[in-house]
Figure 1 (spheres, rainbow, N blue to C red):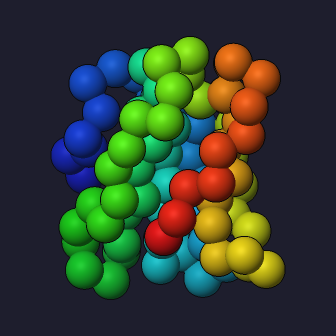
Figure 2 (figure 1 turned 90 degrees about the horizontal axis):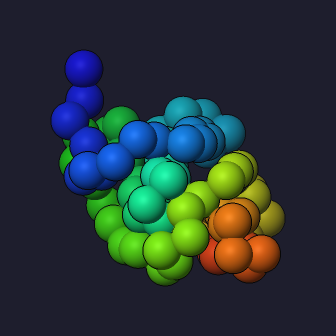
Length: 78
């Protein structure tokens, strides 16, 4: 088990190509990036209160685009 910074249900999860980064998005709008190399959450933010609906890793930009229930897409840095 990995403890997360989320205090609400996690809605979506995405991993980088080699699995060294794992991003999570919650119904409360928080997004977080976990490094499997360091075992730490390297990024935690709440870009929206509407909630994250899906995310994926974009190798071209090195970010995790996260779609939201507010109709926006947020680029989560790593």
